[in-house]
Image (tube, rainbow, N blue to C red; front, side):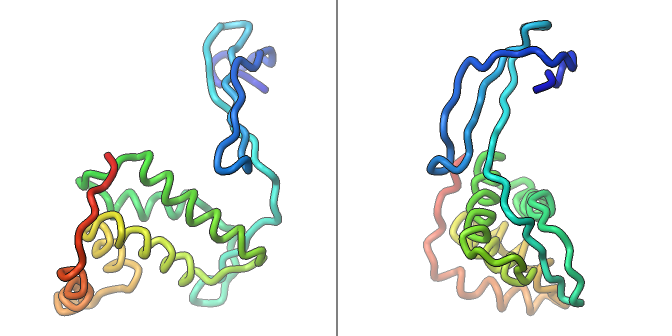
Length: 157
């Protein structure tokens, strides 16, 4: 493993532990050249997941696209980066458990919205407004109306 700081290929593993029920191994490493520490992750290589877009195109699954949407929806909300990472891991894990090689983009959007609805109503409505392409204010009202009767969960900062 090359050090991300000095690019030397000489390190030692100082800590190892499982994550996500043993599907990922986290390794804490120390470069023997510059003595800086960094973390690496090992995960099982799976068949690449394809996302079927609305127009029928098939593109590789990209967790960073989910991250961008979540970060925009959660901007200026009390939601930590760790919470956003957890949502992404949950969605990705659920997609991988289906054992399908292709998934509709609409299904991914619904998975993200379900988690946001539980996490933060404002972020949920923001995400829904883009995902469902709201046309006017009545679309916002229609989406927000059912939320008013639900208890709001406190996000983990």
